[in-house]
Length: 285
Image 1 (cartoon, rainbow, N blue to C red):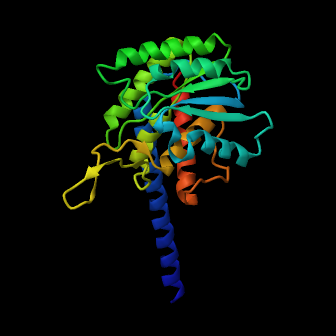
Image 2 (image 1 turned 90 degrees about the vertical axis):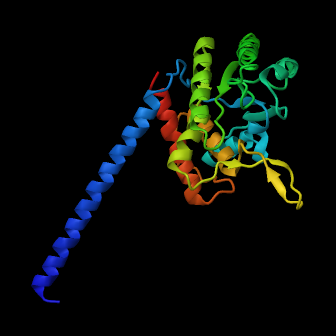
């Protein structure tokens, strides 16, 4: 190649690189605009995270206990940061398919157990409890009573915003607004796990957040599955834990080496997204 051809090739390469960078910036700006529009349409949270919590009890159902529990994933994130102390304690109390009202008696025992000394209790409702026409009023009433019960013991109540079912974005947005409105009314913190699921479904569609539930067997003795996918995969539970870490510790989990059972790239993508979602959600208030 002569000098003139070499110079032309260098100029062409530089020009292509420039166009590529401009294109990337345009797409990044577009994505940012889409994300901002997404969050601007949501109810703003009234209560923001205030301090690190070392002793937290999670109360919920299968959404919390799948994949060895969201509390264990959160504990592993904390441990991998080197921040775990001797007095740290994360525990889980669940009832399969449980609704908030079904935890009343257990919650009283847990609050009065001297070995607990909980700083916060996380309340997670049934997946469709806040939306179901026959359940929604009881959800609000039961959650309000549980919050009063927890506050009376000097413990901080926290609401676990659940997610919409797979490929049902409207359900996710409705749940987000219901949980946030209720948290605002009760003056408690809500953790935007459901919003992280909605954003991850759209931005990280290569990462499966759900697993199907077995329904029955067909005439050929093959398993059939329920139409709605709602329970979390390993990635779904990991994402939920990252959102809790981002919220309760008010910093990104990106530098933490615990990836659960996920490939490093997938875990990193979920860590980044969890921090982005929590930052944008709480910046609205």
